[in-house]
Length: 517
Image (cartoon, rainbow, N blue to C red):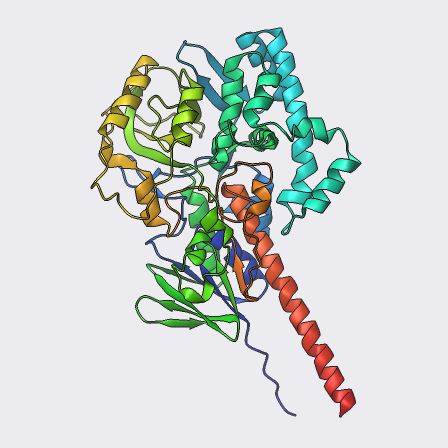
């Protein structure tokens, strides 16, 4: 009896071990691929990164988890449970907001409690407007989740058909309005306009230019916010450990020099040290602009050409430090608003650091189990324009002291101080992000979300090269940890569908050849 050995598994190489690359590796390994995951930095995680401190690793990227179901599904692909690998703590207080006039507003996971908080904050009319706004954004989120976010290749015809089937969506979308315009009609209180306008910055945009449809982003938080015990980096560490258990070859410090294309197909990845890694399937899980600019070789420079034409999203200045806080009680998620929101976004749109920015303070050790330690970990984020170059500005090292002085002064006015006072050594500015993430120009969310059809102009999972696929926050369905994780699902499903089509074609050709014979 002749022994027939099982065919070798198909080889998948994934470039980039951020959340999208890790999620791609999970799905392709679950499908039986032999997976090699390449990461140019010394640790996995991408923008979910940390810096060391006397209080332990401090997150210097995303800080909370939304759309939990996306991650439950991801871990289930390898027969695992999310709760067995990380501890998630659902937040009763979604976020705490502060204004220069001393007013303060908490929003809650309990919708009715939020209505009551808005009523106490700004009156009965504001509470009614908030209720109406929530209903509006809830309907938009529900309507566009399946045909847009959950779909690998959304089509304008499908979206138009969806809207025509539900005519009430048209006024809810306010298609001819910006987010700023919609909020002016939604709220009389300018503080509430400012609060909900900031959701445009979640995808790197300005409410003065982002479409009104982006109001639905609020629902991602309204449906639940979770803190990962220990920090967001615990999530990517858990995924890396799970991949290791299932035999994925994860290589850190692996710099990709170029992608090799033979006979129109991506055939191998060349590392800067000289190694050549052949592949049957290749996933680029970094900023797609790296392909379009030829940063990974001329063979893929025709991929995602729109990324070289479209304007870039905003970036950020991120301050991560350990200190003892003094002043108002902080939640995990805190926003301190500038007095003049219009001026802040005028500066950003003009490519300037805002003179008086709003800023976000994540108190990493709040919202978790137990009492915060005496020395707590903090992350402060302000919006900033993306840099115009991939390296340090030609003028030399950036002087961050005026910005830090401004932020410190604004915090002091709000009654909050830290001991010790943070220094500029703990700041990550846009040009450093540009160095960390090739060809991104420091933009943290890919291309700009401005314009009604901006979301449809992002690169999709499939490319012009049949076995080269894209994933990550720079691709569809967009930026943010849940969206980047969904992009990995879209890429993996495209790969599996395409391989099934190839196998079917091969079987058909074989049957045809046998009948001819």
